[in-house]
Image (tube, rainbow, N blue to C red; front, side, top):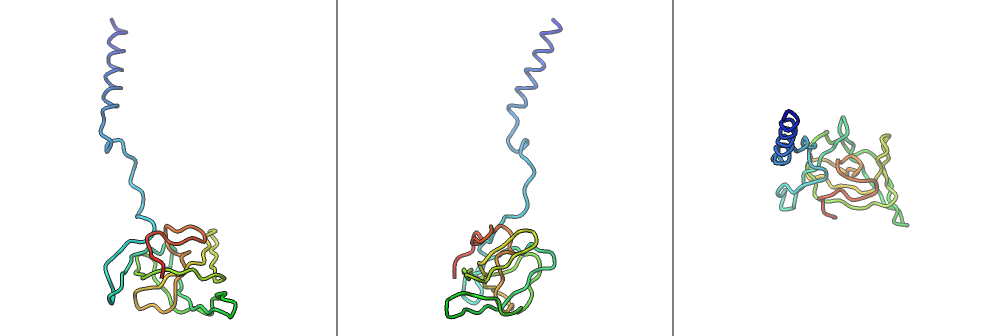
Length: 140
């Protein structure tokens, strides 16, 4: 009789576990959404929110294209803070790549929608992959 009670108790526990709601068994939420998301308009142009993940923010830079259509970084234009910032679009600039010590590398450049001169490399935006577009941000 003792064995039957233990078996029934175990079966009841298993049944209760199987019927638990998915929310009760869900894993903790992950961090903010990677990539960019639409955030209205600025000056009549679509604006997108993207997150700069690097501590201390990131530099905006000036670029120049030579006669062979290869881009180079010609100087630092300004600085954007860490966190959420606005951008209009992104564009591939072959030859103008940025490499970070964490292994991130990219040659896609974002056009800021705020009062920031120059372009920002996609390497500083969360959600991107090496040498690929930032998800959720249109091409220029």
